[in-house]
Structures are given as C-alpha cells and as structure tokens.
Length: 376
Image (cartoon, rainbow, N blue to C red; front, side, top):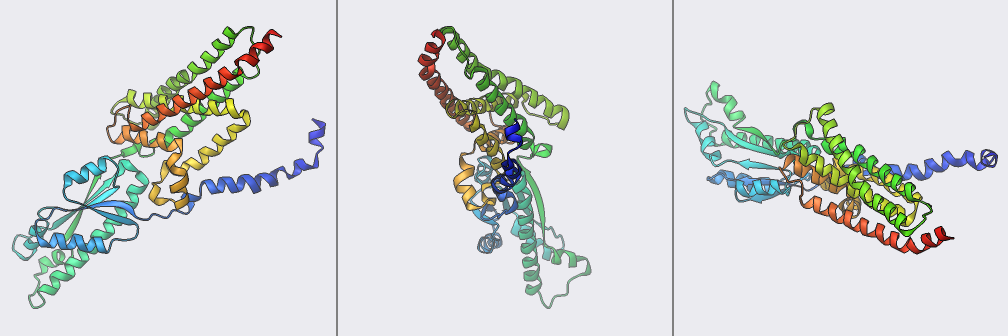
C-alpha cells in the first residue's frame, strides 16, 4: 500500500483519465451534440381527386426541405401499414375533398381545405417533434402559395371584407398523432439504467461466485454451473416485474398489458446477463469495461433515429448495439400493440442461446483442470 501511495505516477492518473476516458466518453455522445437530421422518411398521400392536389403534391416532392425525404403512397391504407412497420416517421395527406373545398372559397358557402399532418409518435418521440415542425412549415408554405394563386386569379374582383381571412389562409392544418406515446415517450430511457445495471451486476456476481473455486468432485462443479445458468432467468423475472411495477407507481405509466412489458424486460435482462457473463468467463473480469462504455455509446440509440446521426454511428455502431434491440422491442409492445414475443424478442433469444452455449463450452473445457486441482 505504501508503495502505491508513494508512487509519483499516481499524481498523473487524473491526467490519463482526462485524456483517454474524456475522448471516449465525449465520442459516445457525439451524435447527440452534432445531430444532423437529414432525409428522414416521411410519407405523402395525394388522395385528392382533383388536379390541384396532384400538382401540389408533385411540387412538394420537388421542393421538400433537406431534413425530410418524401415517400409517395397511393392510399391511406398503404401509408398506415408503413407507419405500423415504422418505415416512415410521419406524413402529409391531401384528403379527397381538398380541391372541392378549395373551390368553395369562391362561393357563398366557403369551406377551408384541410391538410392532415400525421406524426408517427411511437416510432421515436424525438423525431416526432422535429417532423411535426417540418411538416407544419411545409403546410404553411402550401397555404401561402395557394393564397397568392387565388388572389392572382381574380385581380379585378373585389374581395368582400368577410372573405379576406379565407383568401389569406385558404388551408388549415389538422394534426394527427399515430401510435401516440403520451407520457410514455421516454419509457425506454426510464427502464434503461435498471435493466443495464441489473445485467452488469448480475453477471459480475455470477462470475465472482464461481471464480477460482475448488471442488470436491465434478458433480459439485456441475451443480455450480447449473446455478449460474439458472440465476439469469431469476434476475430477469425479478427485475422485469419490479421495474414494470415501479414505472406505474413512480411515473404513472398505463399499459395495455402489464405482463407483456414485464416479461419482455425479463427476457432483456436474462439475455444481457448471459451475454456479459459469457464475456467475463472468456475474457475475465477486466472485460466488464466494454459493457460500462457500451452504455454510454448506446445513449443515442435510445433517443435518436438513425437518420439523425453521423454516418459512422449510423452505419457501423447503432445497427448492432444490444440496447437498440431492447429499445425497438419495447416500443413495439408499448406503441404498436406488438406481442411479447416479437422480432426483437427473437434476436434476444438468439443472444441468450449463443451466450449460454459459450458459457457451457467454457465450463466443459475447464472441467478436467478443476477436477485434477480438487483431487490434488
């Protein structure tokens, strides 16, 4: 202890932390600092039967802001399916009666035309706010363009005083939230620390519980290995139901199915515990640093859409992060009426299975050495 305390290199430790960890941790949150929303897929439906709607839709396609990428859909049914599958984050809809209502502004019974702004809130609440603002701006531009056009078409006809407002604002925007998130928009973030730290601590506890232990027989070692293979499921069930109940008590969350959420969280914890434990078994305890840092690098995956991130993060990191799988699967259950066992659950099962196999391969390969040590 005296040797360590008297070592002048100890004074340089904070400098090393600032230079090395500072770079790593600041790189982890780079996508959140340098958000660059670009080409976010947004649908457009020109259901209007008149030529005005089709012409306006074509104009919007040509002059869409860089933030969004307009994707045309032939019908509302196709758009709704795309939103269910999270292919688009929102949509601009010109209803069937758009041209007809626009024409009434020149009659004695005027009705304002309506543009629907649909926001797929459950897909990503952060993107939903951005898309809502972008589409609202597009609707305002459309409104101004039609106003100028209507005034230009009747330059000599006086506009009645009561109709000035109609000519100035011929179109009104109607906002529609699809797969509304309500107060649960940040649910994936609220569960993250509980899920991740339970998994980390659970894996470390299992590793330390069996590390360097001497056994009287192979049967005793098999018993320990079996316990290590069962406990992640126990951790998962306890954490899943506890976190789901805490969220109701503390945050006031309301679920369509409490058990779906709790069981999904249980599967996530069990898969993550096995994944981390397998790494510890093969690479030893210092490898836990990988997963501590992984949480920081995963934060953008919880809050941002891939289209909002720098290309490097989007193409090389986010796609394989385990926390991204957890987030997408939870959103599927909460906002898209998904079943407990969905496509993301299947990925978690494969992670769990692969990690379990790796753990038992390590158990079997160490068996002879441990038995000989015990007999000696």
